[in-house]
Length: 268
Image 1: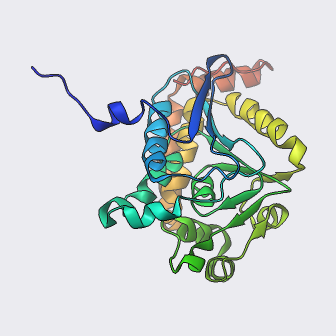
Image 2 (image 1 turned 90 degrees about the vertical axis):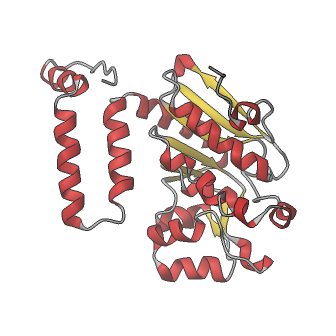
């Protein structure tokens, strides 16, 4: 029998413009954009980012994933010339790649500072938590290129802030500062620039303390029911609740509560 092969095996041999750091002791993986000063995201990098999220999702040593960047800007967006060089079929896959953080079953935190434009904003919107520095500026500037956001940006933003604010951002290519992003409900929290790493670390540790299976269930339930009717959402919530009812972690949580001790969750 011949050995199976897949392009993904070679695609991850040399990461393009980013690195991955796995800290097994802290059950944490960091995906770090590393193409300063603006951390522009190339076409090949989008494919690699998707594969990395899929790989980390299967890694038992990782509980929480952090998406961050070096320097004063998270990312000014994608490689503009790359859009003209890519085939229409390839371009149509961009949104699937950038949605990888949302498909990932584990909690994903985006730590944003400075420019967070275009695909940089879009991949942050696909994460579960967005911690922004006061220096952050979110934008979808594609109208300036005669285009529209192509990786889920306008769609995700409209779900979060409504059609009026989304038109204001998309149709005017308007920048949204960090504090306003928090006020609008785009960002989870807004912190002074010097506190971004500390706030990110604290959230990682907070999330690690919960049951992994309960966290994964909550994330998938919320993602799956975002577009559903209230009745279906309640029905699915009930099914997820009953599934967790038989988990080891739920039993441990109840016993720890009654024994007034910290629970020791195993993820089963």
